[in-house]
Amino acid sequence: MNNLELSERAKSILRYVIHQYILTANPVGSRKISKKYDVGFSPATIRNVMADLEESGLLGHPHTSAGRVPTDQGYRFYVDSLMGVPKLPITEKRAAETILSSSSHDTNDLIKATSTILSNITNQLACITYPQLSNSVLEKIQIIKLSSTKILVVVTVLSGLVKTITLELRANFGQSDLENIQRILNQRLSGLKFSEIRDTIIERFQNIYATQYKPIIRVFLDSADKLFTDKTDNNKSVVTGTKNILSHPEFEEHEKFQGIIELDEDSSMVEIPIEEGYVPQVYVALTSFTNR
Picture 1 (cartoon, rainbow, N blue to C red):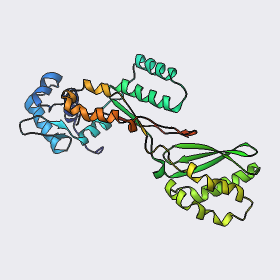
Picture 2: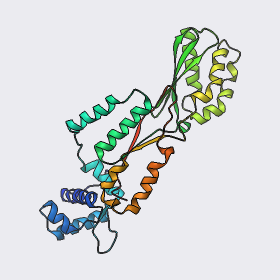
Picture 3: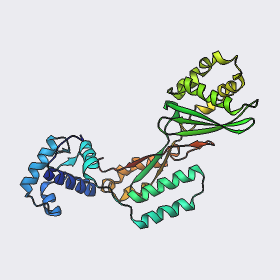
Picture 4: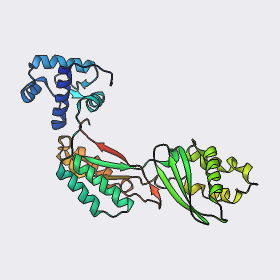
């Protein structure tokens, strides 16, 4: 879709159709574009351009006598090629800073504050979710010595997610030993899914049981479920800004709003238990319901 060539006239018409549809949630006709946006083209010319955009898959035609509506491809083209990058006003920046400064350093509070800021800025429903580690691919393991018998293990996945855990050792290992163990762990586990690691980790380290590293390898085997398990699978989302969508024309009929209320009231979508040392990469879904 990024390779699609459109004339400046077609880009202008597509932009205004999308703007008008977002405002009204109703199909947009050529006469409305001509009157409201002063594009300099007659309704007949606009109608011909809209027909071309429909043939290109950027606009849809829900009814014979109705105007056009943007398609998913139309929205994608708009976001990639027509939408400018907005600048956040200073008042909204200060409001965001106020929300963050009033939050504690607890991960749950910061995530909820971030979701609130997003919903306030966009006037939309905001959702922050955690990825499922079970499907994640291990990038690398790092071992940091904290004391003579305590180490910090940093687990990084390819998506950028980072998880840390502190492990107790039964013997004192030097830095060179820890570096060798780190190298062995990465050689045998990097590139595997967490589910694969949990299922096969014992077999992957059987041949080094007789080495001097057996005690520390045993600790990693015993801790595999803690290191390579996602405890947030069941509760992994925060949703804020439900009240914002009341102002959108799609939900003037309360029946259409019921499903959103049920989503927001589902407690499993709102609470996120965070285990100690779990540092999530935040995934944000800013959902606009203009194409529903």
